[in-house]
Image (cartoon, rainbow, N blue to C red; front, side, top):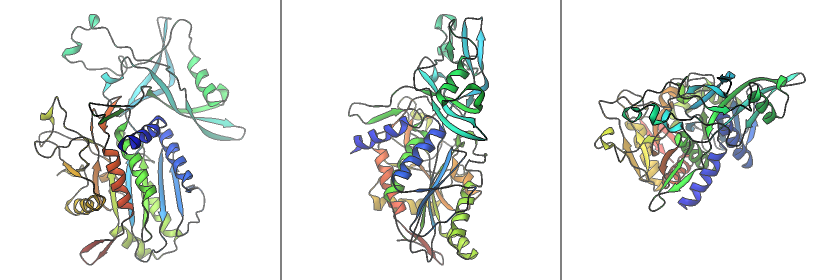
Length: 437
């Protein structure tokens, strides 16, 4: 079963070359399961029992199931993110070197591990905006072949490289695109050809590098899986499968996958935007319920913020807390932080532990070393826009933000089972007490 789920997830990952491709991939699965697309710039007609989804910027997506018995309803929300560290191609993309090479001019997106991007086949994917007669349209593109490579500098020219090196993204990280047979303008021609239009019809682009290496299941017992951007596509995938499998009629189930988590979420499509708030409000208005019911629903709602966590590194166990540390294949990680970089608290942890107990899924706990600054995620950011009970969870992995990350083969199934249980549960409150039904 674990291998089957891992194969299905790697098939999913292969289609998630950029945040735009990830959202298109998620939308395709939703439509296969009967979900109807709504658009923010159109009037909505939603009904109890209906299944819907909305995208923003083509890089964030929110899907929702409307229950049929919404007397005292609440929202069950699982949130993940669609983006990952990579290199974005600048508007003027080509750089000529001594009339012998053509490089691509890139800039870093997010906090990548630069050294892992060298000397491996890369390609280019993203979206372009094209003019079609009297309107503009977005097209997803993928060059789909080994196109560029970031060549490492030979040790003979940098003898101290193994003693530590500070990579300069404008100098060291530019990919090689062509040699003498190439000339400036070839890249734009290639992009227009991939979009199926002429060069003059391309008016804008969001293009990124991606790793062409195939995902791999490996280890003595085939217990590990390695692939690009497991952070956070592993959680995005598992949350989606649990969302599609779970259902109950007394709540509104919500699946959210936000862009731009890796750069702070403060964009119109990020977790720090009004996207979630806008959708929840429009759902409530479409149900023709009193204003008071919305605030009661929010007070009873619960969100799972799902983003991967750092496993103990076999070469550096000292980098994690002595006791509050986690391992691959040992269950879902619950993340806590005294400074509120994670949104978990005693209430939300208790509720989620009960969910996992019912799903027969193991849990483990993560906290940063007290003398180390850890990363934050989208849970506490989105809670600033919609105040919800929330818990930060994830799956243990190694080499986070590498071009090729590693996780446990069992953990994807654990997350799917927990998400299915979550989306099959109705949360409600009476006085000071919280009930799960």
